[in-house]
Image 1 (cartoon, rainbow, N blue to C red):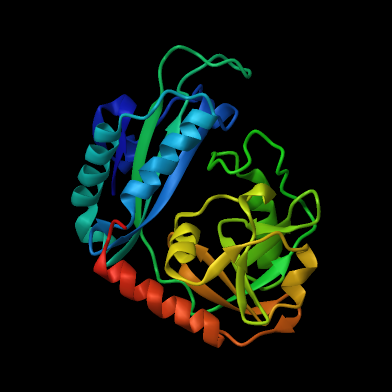
Image 2 (tube, one colour):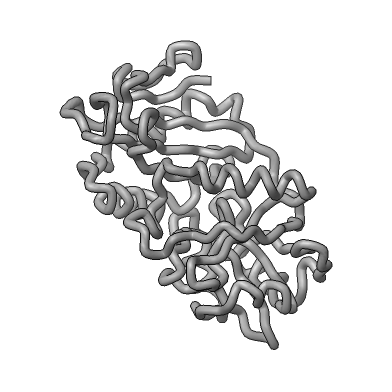
Length: 277
């Protein structure tokens, strides 16, 4: 594999793809990132992802990424690795504050940009999820920012795997349903399709936004307990698309239910018709 690393001036082989041990993204998780689905060498919804990367960087007080440079890095990375990526892959764009002194102060070296890709298998047709009690802080300055500070998500996902599940759902500090560790969540209650509002601190997911545009869904604050009473549940992410949930904790659900199946079908149809909606 070859990776695009700004300090190296572009593409380098894996054994030479290195960033400094003083990079603020490594020492204090001072950075942002995006993950995209790549089908047959084409990244999906790249404009929306780059818009969010820029919003996240602004929220973190980082210099705005050079969009033309990012697009060049993406294209070169995908072209260089095309034979190894197959027809379904994951692309990650990471953008950090760059080298800095040990501690919280930023340095003056300028940002680091890394673009990497890897082949991946499609997600299972449905997922089991668990609920965990560790809340998302909707009042945090990082609420809604796709930062590289992912330790809370790592721990919650590890708990899910310990319980035979593929994702963990978390509340916010007010006890409202929020999101998954790497996904947004939708529930169907008495025929209504609902996803938590951004006020809960959940990430404004690209797939979440598209489902809101393409389906009869609403944003609404609901208690965390609503997940246990929902008629249908599905989770969304940039690589999962729309994934039905067949189990929440110990409770089994139809997967997909009729509403979820309709959303899946519409999402598949529209995303095939436009790779950059």
